[in-house]
Length: 290
Image 1 (cartoon, rainbow, N blue to C red):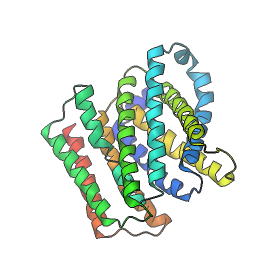
Image 2: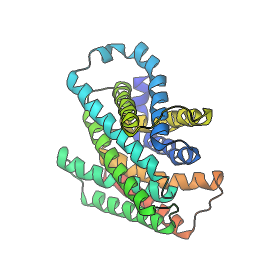
Image 3: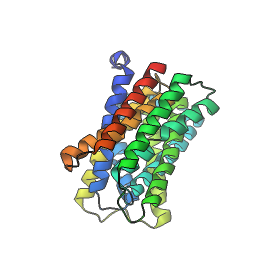
Image 4: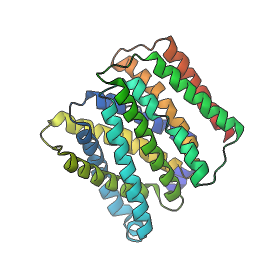
């Protein structure tokens, strides 16, 4: 299995992961539960699905985990939980297009962190690509009218969510150098789930009584967006830089817009199309710089 995975092009896997997380905004939009609740359900299902796999196939690696690795995964899980809370909440105040674009600016923060923390280097073409990709995201945001009662508040929440997930990505780069994808993601998701439960308790948010629909949406988010999204990103971090992984995520607004056409009959306007082309071009440039 490991040999088969090693033969898979990490960039192809990365695109599959981006497609997986592109369903996030759609599922969250369908939810009527508080943001913390749907996030808690998502991680609860994720941990439940991974538990038997870890217990059967990875128990030896789990048993031999070092304390510092558990600690780093716990910190990573906390920042992932904060990301989910902030981003899910932002979708209540601003549009899917604006929220997904702003949270995708993670690439800027991840690139800065890669340089400062890992002493990484980004060549001129890479810097240009990041700027181009970000400008394409700005064009998409400009094309959106931004629904909701407090658009600015929602935009700020999405931006803060981008900072949180950038930290999560950088820690993942550190840990994936010596931990398997399954163990790293399992411990991180467990820590994320516990963090969300703590957030629920601190804010006084009940985690039950929202109906079967919310439970199913949590399951769908756990499978398509966490296991087939974030887990793939964690696997890719062993082969690709965190700034490249974050750059590719900027395709999420493009994929989300395509999904919106089929699901909500929301046809993108000319600015959205232009912005999408610019984003794809920027990601391609960054790919060449790598």
